[in-house]
Length: 591
Image 1 (tube, rainbow, N blue to C red):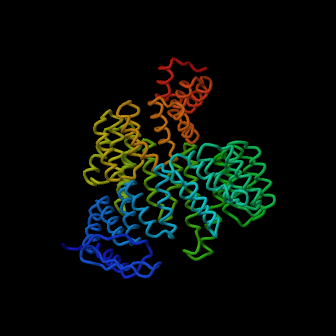
Image 2: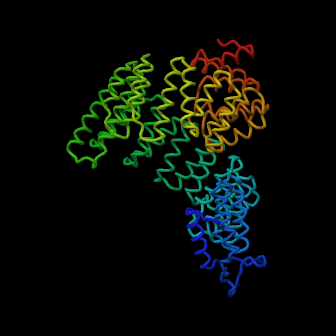
Image 3: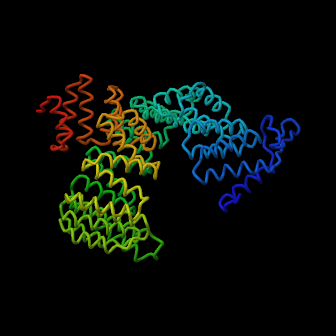
C-alpha cells in the first residue's frame, strides 16, 4: 500500500501517541491485535504499536481522505476500544462529525469520555450530542453535579450553557438549564444571564427580562446585565427598559458600548431626536472621538435627513484625510474610514435617486480592499440607469484576482440583465459560466433560481441537489428546494428533512423560519406554524411572510389580527402576488 504524504504526519503522530500511557479502565483486546500491559492500579496501560494496529489506522485515515468518514470513524472507534487510547476516540468523534453522522459521533464521544473522564472537552461533547439527539434523561442532574463540584462555578455554568445550547427544542433546553442551575441561581448573576438568554430563545421574553433584572440585582455594575435589560426589555416594556438603561448609564457614564447600543435601538424605534441627543452628550464628553461623527451621520441617514448626514460625512472625511496626512501610512485606519464614509454617501445618493452622484463617490474610493466591491457596484448602478453597455464595459474592465472574484463578476452580470427584465440572457450568462466553472455552487444556485422563475422545475431541482452535493452547508439551497416542495404541497416528508437541515445551519434566518412555518401550516400544525412565522415576520415584515402569517391566524380564528397583518403587508408591497392570491382565495376584502 502506498502512503500519501498527507497521511504520514497523522500516522506518525498517532504512533508517537502510543509511546505515552493513558489512564483508562482496562478492557480485553482481541487476540493478535495489540499488546496491552496493565501496570500498577491507577496507572495507565501501555500499548504496543503492532503492524495490525498501524494498518487499521492507515485504513481509517485513507478512508477519510476519500471522504468516507463513516468508515473512518467506525475503524478508529474500534481501535480506540482495543487500545484504550482516548486520542483515537477523539479522532473517531471528529471523523463522524465530518460525515455529519450524529449517531456515530455520539458513540465515539461517549467512548472518548469513558477513556478520558477527566477531559472536559470529551465529557462536553458526549453530553452535547446526547442533548442534540433528544436524550436529556439525567442531563440536568449531571450538569448540576458538575457545577456543584467545580472549583470555578462560573466556568462550569458556561460549559453547561454550551452543552444545553446544542438542543434543538429550546423550551426543553430552558427546562434542563433551569434544573441544572438551581443550586447556584441565588448567588450567581451569570446563571441568571444564562437563563435570560435561554428564555429568550424559548420564546419567553417576559421571563428573559425578569432574569436580566435578577442578574442586575446580584451584580448592579454588570454591563452584560444592563445590555440584556435593554435588549429584552424593549420587547416587553420599551419605556421602562430605556429608562432603566439611562439610569444605569448615569452611574456608569463610560460604558460606551451600551451607549452606542442604546443609540442603535432608539434609532430602530424611530426615536431619532433622542438618539441624536444621546450622541451629542457623548461627543461633549469625548470631543476627540471622531467615530461619533460617523454614527451621527448614520442616524440622520436613517431618519431621512440626508443633507445633515452628508454634511457630517464630509466633515468626517476631511478629519480622516488630515489624519492620513499627519500619520505615516499603515499606522492609521484613516483610509479605510474614509472609504466607509464614501460608501454611506453612495447609499444616501441611491436613496435620493442620484445614481450618477453615487457612481462618482464609488470612483473616489481608494481603499484597495474595496476597489473590487466599488467597481461591481458601479456596474450595477449603470444597469439601474438603463445603460447596459456601460455596465458591461465596467465589468469587462475588472481584472478578477481569483476564482471568487470571477464568480462575483458573473453573478453581477447576470443580475444586471435579470433586473433589466432580460432573464433569458441572464440564464445564458450563467449557463456559460457553469460550463466554464462547473463546480461553483453559487453559479448553480443562481441559475437554478432563474430557471425556477421560468417554470423549469425539474432543472431547478437538479441544480439545487447539485449545489447541496458541492456545498453541504449551503442553507439557502436546502431552504429553496424544501420551500418549493411546501409551496407545491408535494414531497412534504423530504421538505421537512430539507428545512430541518436548513434550520440547523442558519437557525435565525427569516426566510428559513418562514419556510418552516409554512411547512407546519401545510401539515395543519397551525400553532407551531404561528411560532415560526411570527419570528420570521419580526425580522422580515415582508408581504410574502405577512400572507403566510395572516392565513395561519385566520385558520386559528384570530380574524382581526390576521387582517391587521395583511394590511401591514399590503402597505409594504401593494402589488405582492402572494398576498393578493391569499386574500382572493379566502374571500377577504381589506378596508
